[in-house]
Image (cartoon, rainbow, N blue to C red; front, side, top):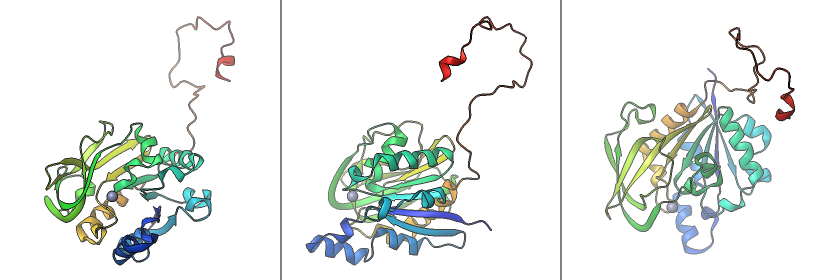
Amino acid sequence: MKKINVTIWNEYRHELAEGQIGEYIRKIYPHGIHTFLAEKLQSEDFEIKTATLDEPEQGLSDELLNNTDVLIWWGHCAHDEVKDELVDKIQKRILAGMGLIVLHSGHMSKIFRRMMGTACRLRWREAGEKERIWTVAQTHPIAQGIPETFVIPNHEMYGEPFDIPNDGKIIFMSWFEGGNVIRSGVTFERDRGKIFYFSPGHETFPVYHDAVIQQILTNAIRWAAPACYVPPRITKQPESPEIIRTENPLKAINTTVLHK
Ligand code: ZN
């Protein structure tokens, strides 16, 4: 069985913070969100690696990126530190077929905004309120085995208006105790790449400890994994599949200079 190569990229700054808040987060994720997810999402059809922002090449060497089938992204306070050249490479890889799963505050990451083409802003509030998630696309692969509705007891509120494009397919929607709602699980397709945005996962609550959340991420990895990759797109087609009988009115003029 060919395994799905999964790379879990984490900014890995909050978990290393000094003082009371850092200590609190380390109780939930002692070695970072990436390490925790790598352990919990283990499956015989996954080969999971982790990468963090402060590693050489910001964690994603060309070799690693070119061997990644599904990239999971968690970032928050250091989005701007991610180099544009790296974002270019990730985008290229996604367009060729790599899957991308963007978690929580990754909605403002450079790579997600690049793939969406919109600002990706949303409302938020940190009150530790209850979030109720609804599965609204029950036949979708990411929703398999997931209850129709379930609760995260305490979470940061993320709410609409959420500035993402309208071609997204809504898999999950959330309601918060304070009254807000959000499209909390949305899929997109960009050329050959599949993208899943999933809003749960604030660092000060043990959201990724939840078995249902883990199942959603497992399903999402299998859904986002590419069936195959396409090489960089060559668009010129010198041979037409049918005979062109219409006379080219510009045949006496060399138009190829316009394509250089
Ligand atoms: Zn958050």
